[in-house]
Image (cartoon, rainbow, N blue to C red; front, top):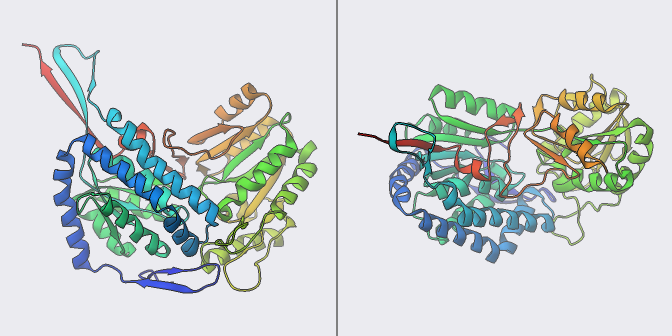
Length: 461
């Protein structure tokens, strides 16, 4: 697919369902103008009115759940049950900010500031923002960015992934039907070059990107050149450390489901599973059995656990990484090949014996591949976990929760979990460190990234 082509193509069959015209330079200029003009009026509305609009968005997600879920099942291959779950998660984010957001942006008195009658910090919008979002969670990724900023009073220009043009159009329609004024949320179908021009426009005050390191680097460079605030949510190679006293069979079964969810196409999926060497063989056997029992198939069919990858291009890249590992000595316990026939299907895969000369050692494997490593000491496991250039999230699994929490505290990540992995909900901040990006979304942090924290101080006479 060329860079400038927006189209929905069913990755389970290869069928091109619809093509979309890219927005022209004139249309982009008009969109920026509308967003800029809407920003003042939207910010001037009461926070209660903005919250009510977000609640209406949440309600419409519930009412149109089936339509929204089917759209992403068809365009990026998410099994329908998982797609419904994503729609519900996005709705919960809009609803959470509608209910809790007003308190998050209330004025804050600085009681310890001396020499004045009053010192207040007000949380105010900055204006128009550009969001650049990926295809793997089409609704959830947008909700993390859009909900807090619309609540705050900012306006949104949204460049979605090219393969998600259908669901992007649906989202814009939901915002319109919820009664948001024209210009508050606008779907843009633009090239990377056009996106760079939007970032450079002085009317656009910030940019948030969820995507690859390459894309993040390019956006950060352009934003920095024009003195724009940027939030980056990039890749991950999350460690999952299983301690000696963990319930090995239970954890292995959980890992099998967690790693294969969304066909393994999640930035915060447990990609590196670390197990004590004394339990390694049994753990891998249980994990492999758990992977093999999952059904691969059409995402629209009931009972499908693992759908196709998002595209043929994505499948080709993953298979190259797998083949590189196998050629250099990695052991394949199951899978490792493309599935013959139509669609971008890959056999769910379990690998061991990954070594530093293999691409899989340092690169993110964005697909249905579980990699398991043995270790002899907790210190060794933590050192290996932290050796990655990524730092999104990580988890530690054990019966002794206090020991697990101590180990989790040693992980160089933005999100550390004990006896769960990758849990996301509106009240929990989301974000990473190192090459996984910077900035935070969700919770109170979501309304603080693109805000003017303005001091208003009344001096004593």
